[in-house]
Length: 137
Image (cartoon, rainbow, N blue to C red; front, side):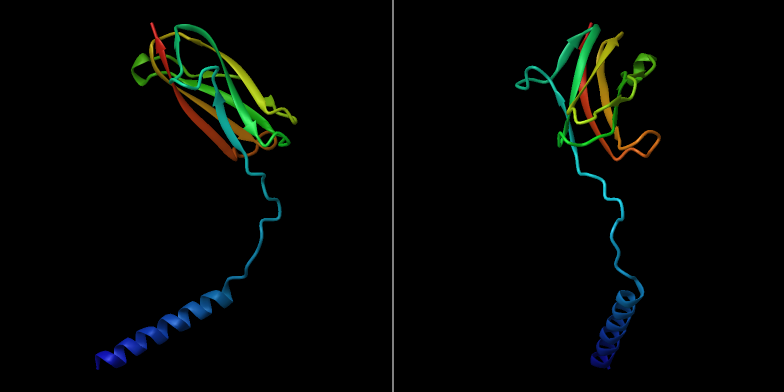
């Protein structure tokens, strides 16, 4: 009895898997997006980035160099600071692999810096990068 139940289960699984493979056609994405990498660039990568209150420029590298699109950075203040987010304008990376933004840090604590990539204006973001930046008083 157990042996016949096992055979029925195996037969049912094979039938379902065969039908599933036949029912779902294979397809390719007609507009593949380039795979890209974004990384924050600091002058000294040997230690965590830190800054005192005030203006601070942040650079993000976008690779490969030949990609086109838009990048925007956002600085999110510490949750308990009651400060608003700071936004930089969208910047074209037309075969330029760096975007630079200047933020004016108004309060101490750990800020989250986010970079967002869009292949064309008003499209969904297809890549993002995050880092934390400790801001002292």
